[in-house]
Length: 239
Image (tube, rainbow, N blue to C red; front, side):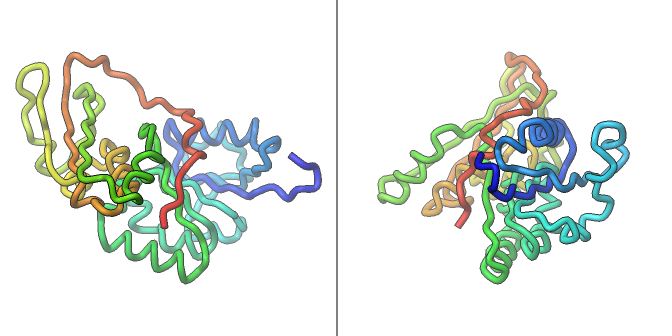
């Protein structure tokens, strides 16, 4: 990084496993990458105690503008995007780490409107969806006729809501949902983000045309969320 370059000011919303890893990387490697961490917000501020410098702890998300961020990275929960995404865009560019939030058409519209009005960009983290650029190119060329994304995980890794939470697991492999991704995201907000990224990568199909399949598979080993994925910051622009 050139020594005279002004660093990009970054705020992080969410301090779970992924947020903790991201904050750690920004504190240790940010300066050499031209990035400066200016705040961390978490719904439970006590979780930041002892690990986030007090000067960086933001107690009120509505006050983020006082930190003058260039980019706010959300790694919390889709509800944060639905409740505060448009407000964040008043102050900064926004990287959405919970793209399942955009399955809600009102939220998508609000973000697009705020993005255009305040001239701030919305980015979407691709997460575990390798090859997303190929999907986008194929879709833009008119060659994508259908897209189906299957996500299989150990039942312990599922965090389901509503009717999906009541679906019984039968045998070692159970298909919990198969259908348009828009119908899955509200009931599996934490387990459908990769599928949501696929829907955004293929706008000709979108949330209603891309098919998502969510599978509970006892043969898979339960594993913690793989935080520290550098692909979080190599994201595609959401138009």
